[in-house]
Image (tube, rainbow, N blue to C red; front, side):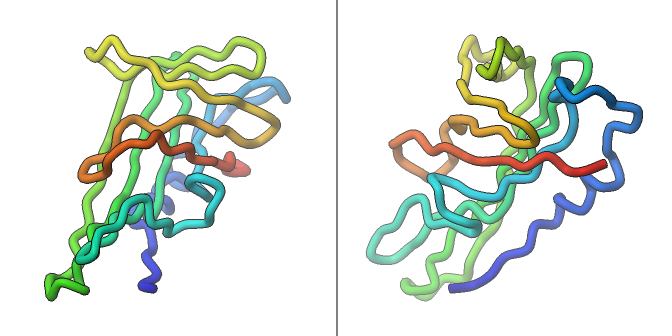
Length: 146
C-alpha cells in the first residue's frame, strides 16, 4: 500500500490557537488519526479497479464557535492503469458542545454531524465524502499539544 503524508497537518503547528487555557476548553486544532477504527491511510471504498482512501484530516474547533474540517482523500485506480489522484474536501460552519456531545453544522446546509469529545480527542461522523458511497464514516482526531 502507498503511504501518504498530509500536506496540511504541519500547518496546524503554525496556525495553532495561542492563549487557549483551561482543562475544559475544547477549542484548538485536532489531527485525524483514524477512520472507522483503522489508522490512516484507510480504504473507505473499493471496487475491482479503484480504492478510495482517506489519507489525512484536520478539525479546527475555534473559540468563536466556528469549525474548519479538512479531509484529504486519494482515488487510487492503479489496478486499472490510472495514476492515483488526491484531493482535499473542506467544510466550514458552526459547532456546539453539550457535555461530551459535539454537533457540527456546516454553513448553508441545514445539516448537522454528531460526535463526542473527551480529554484531548474528538470522534465525529464525517460529512459524505466525494466518490465514496455510504455508509457513514467515523473519524478520530487527537488535539495538538500547543
